[in-house]
Image (cartoon, rainbow, N blue to C red; front, top):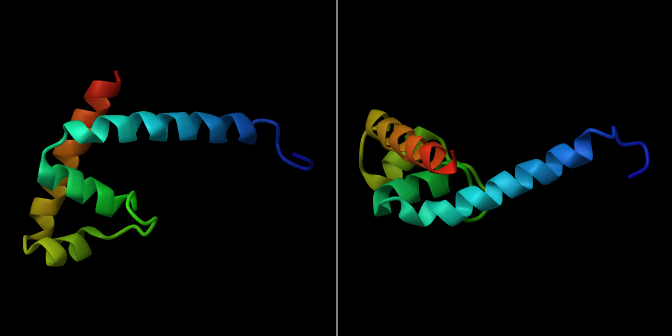
Length: 81
């Protein structure tokens, strides 16, 4: 692309590959973990939700959303390595 830093395009491609890998592994999360990750990172409609918004939607505390998110991300990271 004209006027684009040469390092930007490979970074975009790498991020897209990593995103696709994560999406393929998200199916191994339990139902609640999957829902929190999808909402938190906008995987369903591109709109990211805060932990507080997710807590209200699911009827749980914000700190519990945080713990679910942390556990889910740890599973995904472990699976990617």
